[in-house]
Structures are given as C-alpha cells and as structure tokens.
Length: 219
Ligand code: ADP
Image (cartoon, rainbow, N blue to C red; front, side, top):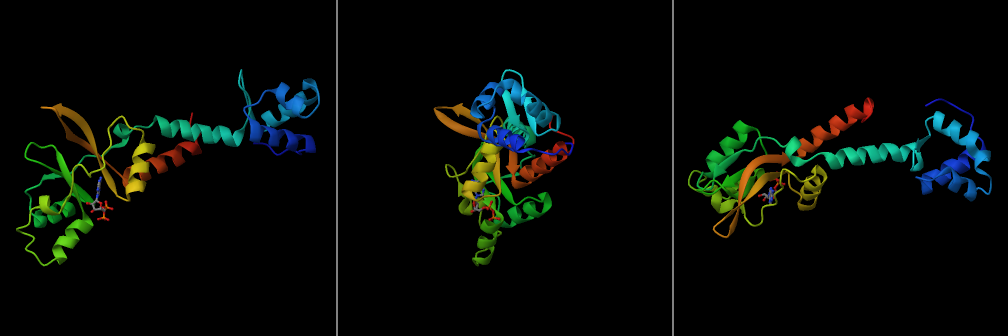
C-alpha cells in the first residue's frame, strides 16, 4: 500500500464501500449525489493505493473485507481429514495403569477406547486417569472401560467435516481432542471406526500455517 493524501470525498467513499460493499461505482455515485465520472479518479486512486479492490461484475470491496473473506474461504476449505493426526487407541479391558503408561509413551492427552470388535466405545483423558489414581483403588486391576466417557456421549468428527466445525465442537464441549471416525452400518447398528485424532494441537498448527501463508498472501 502506498501513502496518499486522502480528501473528505475519499473517506466518504471508503465508508460507503466498507459498510455496503461489494458495491458498484454507479451505486456509490448515486449515494453521493454525483455522476459516476465525478468519482472515477477517486475510485482509481483508492484502488491503486490498495484500499479498495475492484472486482469485475461484483463491484468495489474494502480491502480489509477482501482479506477477511480470503481467510474465511481458506478455513472453510480445510477439512478434518487434511489435518488429522494418528489416533492412539487401547481396548476397554486395558488397566488404568497401562493406560497411564500409554499416555506417557504416546505423548497424548487423551486416549480413544475400543471394544473387542475394535470399534470406538469411549475416550479417556488425563483427569479421568488421575481421578482413578487418587481414588484409592488398585489401578492395575481397574479396566479403563469402567472409568471412561462412553458412547453415545463421545463427541466425534468425520474426515469430510470442515475444521471450523471440529474446532466449534472442541470449544462447546470443553475437551482437548475428538476421534475422527467413519460410520459403518452393520446389523442395523451404526459403528464407528477410528481413522484419526483431531486436537487443539491440529488447530494451533493450522493457525501458524495461516499466519505464514498470510505473510506471503493466501492466493
Ligand atoms: P482433561 O482431562 O485434561 O481435562 P479433556 O478436557 O479432553 O481432558 O477431558 C475432559 C472430560 O471430557 C473427561 O472426562 C473426558 O473423558 C471427556 N472427553 C474427552 N474427550 C471427549 C470427547 N471427544 N467426547 C466426549 N467426552 C470427552
């Protein structure tokens, strides 16, 4: 963007485009009670200085909203499947002690739990394990299936879901991670095959990615 001396007329045009854009030059001119040719030079200057963008067949847009729109378009195009991590899962008969060991070895904050048939049956987090550990029972004996958050209360996402939807679920339910699942219909039942893990870390990585891309433009 280059530095230019703005006149009142420029500020009026910017305000109109900011609040009503995308807007055609005819419309801007009519709101200012002038002819279209009277503002042609002003619009050229605002466009060349990078404050407005002229979109053919659409009209003038304030550059701030163009950038916002680019970020929104980019975010809406990213799917859970593009970002998901490898899932960490154990069966519901695993002891709380072994779940703690797995959590340390795999460096995750929650572990997905599967039933005998290897479909999702629950999820267990750090606090679930801590609660069991300070509860006084023998953590070598208690299976995670007893203390886990179980289906149908587990919040899941599908690979084709937009990441914004996954982030909204994480926020709304105040949890750290979601199992990414594919639905399987079997004997009149819906079963969930775990195909990934989507966590706050994935969102943080995306955030950094967007920051880097914006440095060089999102196009
Ligand atoms: P932390 O234990 O560190 O607070 P979370 O915030 O992820 O970790 O978990 C909080 C509670 O929510 C725990 O009881 C856990 O079992 C449950 N939980 C974690 N992930 C999910 C999920 N995807 N769906 C439903 N409940 C979950």
